[in-house]
Every structure is written in structure tokens, then in C-alpha cells.
Image (cartoon, rainbow, N blue to C red; front, side):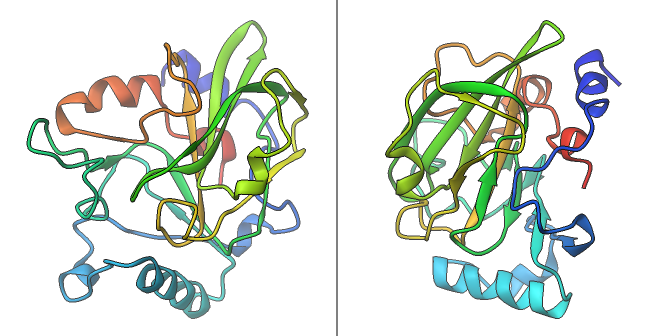
Length: 224
């Protein structure tokens, strides 16, 4: 394991959703192209998507469905953000998704400050997004929180400090979150370069090696 990944794994007691929900109420979910369920069922609207997630949680007596890191998906084919004639298709997810109802509190993973935020509009995009900057043991890195509510970015400023476990946002409805079932896209970023309030959460096959290096598995930190 690489040194930054080991560093993340050694940080204890991290949560990014309502901390009254225990990890034994989480269930893994497969939204990849290899899931045979999607050969007969197509998730082409946010309502179908939400119904699918709700049914899955109910069937498994769970509160949160999680997964998706380095997962190849068909979910993005309906959006030109990920598919256009000029570039390679982007369909590999490089964050961790946590599927739960809108309005759920979102927590800062670690002490830090607000690096940037934005409302990334458009079908398939993040919607309201917050990026935090962290500096721990002289290691600087970033965490991204996507698909938030509008209210989450109304009364914050760049440079605001946050504490580990502090509520920084709530999850948004489909009409603001890029037209997805409500969920949190959580991503770790080593080098954010010039990105501001946004950073790719889905990549193409040809860029995968770079993004897996720059955006290690968030579950190293969360340990679900």
C-alpha cells in the first residue's frame, strides 16, 4: 500500500453522514455494468433510481447503501457531460457514493477549511458542491462533497474553518443534485491543481491510472 493510502487508513473514527447511523446499518450496492439486474431494468430517471435504492435498502433492512469506487457504470450515458463526440466516454466512478434520503446531514470528514464551493448545474453533474482542504501531519489534501442541497452553500465562505464531525451540509433532492437519487458523492483528492468548487468524479479508461493515484479509495478513510 502506498504511503498516502496508509496515512488515510491510520486516521480513526471518520464519518461523513449523520453520525447517529451506525455502520452496521450500511449495505454495499453494485451499480456497475456487470450487475445483471440492469440488463432488464434501466435507471433512466431520478424517480426510478430513487425507487430502486429505496427498495434495495428496504429489502436489506439498511439505512445507507454505499459503494462505487473504481466502478464502471452505465448511469452516465444519458448526460453529454460524460459523453460527447469529441472525447472518450467517461464512465468509471472515482469517488464513494452513499445513498440515503435527501436532507440527511453531511459531516466534515476531518478538521480543515473550505477550499471552494459551487453549484455545478446540469444533468448528471454534482449540483451544490463543497471542497474542504485538510493539512494533517504536514500532509495537505482535499475532500469533496457533491449532490448537496442549495441551502448547504448559501451561508458559507471560502476559508471558513470546520471541525471533524461538524455538519457542513445536507443532501439535496433530485431537482438540484444533477437528477440522481439523493446521495453523497465523497472523494479524496491529493492534488487539486486549479479546480475550484468542482473536480472530476468520473473518468475515462485512458485516464484511470492517474485518477486512481490522485484520488485513492475514500473507504480507506471511512472504513465502512
